[in-house]
Image 1: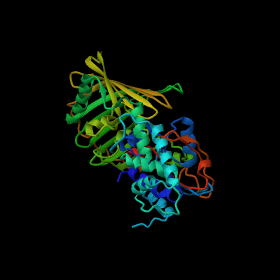
Image 2: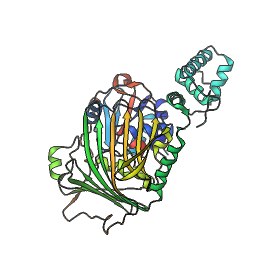
Image 3: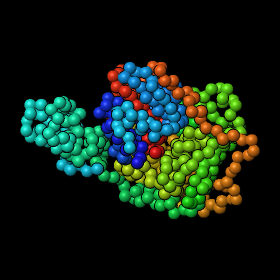
Image 4: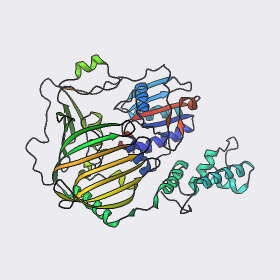
Amino acid sequence: MKVTARIERLHEIGMRARIRVVAWDLFDVREAILDAVRENAIGYPILYDPSREAVESYSNGYGARATPSFCIIDENGIVIESWIHDFDRFEAAVERLAGVELG
Amino acid sequence: MSALGLPASPNLEHLKNEAKELLASFRIHDAKAVRRVEAALRLTPFPPTRMLRLSDAQLVVARDYGFASWPRLRNHVLRIAKSPVQSSIGGDPEALAVYREMIAAFRAAQSLSFEIRSEHRYWLADESVTGMTRLWLSKPNQLRQESFDSSGALYATSVVSDGRLLGYWYGKRPKYEGEEEDAYQRTCENAYYQRDVDMGSTYPFLNDTAQVLRMMPFIQAVEPGLFFRREPPRNRLIVAYRSYGTEVVDGQICDIVEIEMSIETPHRSTRIWIARSDRFPRRAIETWAGAMEWTTTEEWRNVSPIAEMPDGTFRWEPPDGWTRWSLAPDAGLIAPGTPAPDFDVALLDGGKLNPAKLRGWKVALALGWGWVAAW
C-alpha cells in the first residue's frame, strides 16, 4: 500500500483517539503536492511551507534532514520518541497509541 | 473518484452551507437528515451518546457526492475553480502532440546519453545555483550520473545496475544538518553510499537519492526518469498546452511547447524546446510560482539517443579502504522527554498548524524528503 494511503488510514485511526497524524514533505514540497493531488490523498494534513526559515527551523528541531524522520509528541507537547527511516514503526506507534488491535 | 451529482461548477461555500444545514437539521432530529447521516456514516441508528460534529456533516456531504472524505471533495472543487479550462486539458492540440512525441522518444530509446547544464534561481532569495549533470541511461535499469559543480569540477558519481545504487564523492562528501563535526571528519573521505533501487516502480533515483546525497545540482524540469517508463506525475495536473513556434537551439530546429500545470496555490509551467530531429529536449525552463518562486533553466547538450555505452559505464566497486556511509540513526533528532520545538506552518488545505492548536492531542509527526510521493 502506498504511504499516502497508509497515512490516510492512520489519520482516520488517530482522529478517533485524539491523535493528530501530520505528514510533512520537508524539502521536495513540489512532488508532495503533485502526489497528494494525483492520489486525492489530502485527507490528512500535509504541511506546506517551503520557506527557507521553515525548513531550517524544522530540520534543526526535529532531525529531519535528507532522511525520513518521525516523532511522537504527547498531549503536553513533550516528545515521547523520535527516530528515522522506519515508517513501519510510525504505523505501529499510531496504532498502539490509538489502541488498535494489531494483527 | 466519482463525483456523482456534483454540479459542473461546484461552489465550496454552497457545500459548506449544505453541511451546516445538515448539522442543524440533524440536531433538531429532522428525520430526513438523520437518515442521511446514518446512511452516509453507516451508523444505524446513530449512537445517542455521540455528538454529530460539523466535520461529520461534511463527511456526509462528501460521501453523498461520491467522495471518500471532505478534503477530497474540497480539493476537487478548488482544483476545478482554479483551472482555466475546468477539469479537462485544453490548449493547442499540436503542442500536445509534440509533447507526447517527446515522451514516446524517451520510452522508445534503448540507450541515451546527454548533459544538462542548469541554473536554479530562487527569486525571493535572489540566489541562483548552477551546475552540470552528465547522464548515461540504458534499459531496463542501468544508469550512470556524473555531477559537476559550478566551476566544472566533477564532485560525485552514482551508478545504478542490477537494482543497486552505488554513489560516491570525489574528495569530501557533504556535511548534513545535525551531524556532529567529529563524526563528519571521521567519515567524510573515501565514503560511498549504497541502496537498492527499482527504476521501474520507485520514486526515481534522479530526484531522490541523488539530491539527498547532493550528487546532482537540483530537480530536473524534464525528468530523465521518463526513459524508464515512469509515468510523469505532472501529467495528471496539466491543464493546458501551448505552442510558441520554433527556435534553433544547439544547431537543432526545436518546437517550443509549454505545459501549464495547475495545483492549489502554486502555479507551474514548463516550456520545452523539443528537437524535430529526435524529439528529445534541448532546452527547458520551468517556472514555479507559489510561496517560493523559482525558475529552473536547463540546456541539454550532446544528446545521443543511440549512445554506445563504454565498458564499465554502469559498474563501480568501492576501492579497498573505502567505507559504506549512511546517516547516523540519531544525529540531530530531538531527544525524548524534551519539549517539542515550536513550529507554525501552512497546510495544503490553506489552514495553519502550530503546537498551540495541538495541545491536548497526541501528535504523530512524519517528516521527510519526497517520501510522501516516494513510498
